[in-house]
Length: 251
Image (cartoon, rainbow, N blue to C red):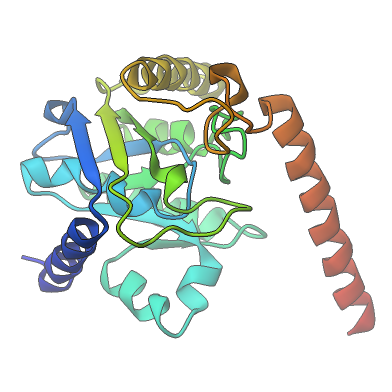
């Protein structure tokens, strides 16, 4: 029993109902009733982690998400994140979070990971980091791919949040477990290919208005292409690095 997590989920479901969100979930039978597993999720918006835990409730389980340290530093969200046993990630020193995740996996927990490491501005699957694969190999647990579509319509990078009653449809698909194998690079590539195929399949039954900001260029939307989005991310990373250097030189 986890009263805090159950309470938070209850509040979240109430909020989802108020917003009129319409969830379609398929493949939740692939989530194990017991034992550890890495849940690898695509990342298109700020709220998608709140939706990613829903399929696990089919087997009455909770997901421990890896999230950036800044969320834990916040006076409001920090205590909640710690109470839910989520894992803080310091992007400058990620070894502690990695070890914490592996420990939880070995103890039979579900650990939610975003292999893209950041929101995809193109809403396509970005290049993956190898952390999810390395965790699965080290803890000897499967990776379960999960893709979410529609979360970017609620709140995504560079656009206003839409947290009112929008009646937004959100589709979630859970894939078959992928048994861990080495090398991690090959496992990462298999995961990437699998999630690309899952996302394309999920998008088939979803209405995509031409020119909409949340629709990928490939489907006739105005979102940047994957290549354009990667350049934007690189420019942002350079600005952050310069700001960090300026702070350090001034200290």
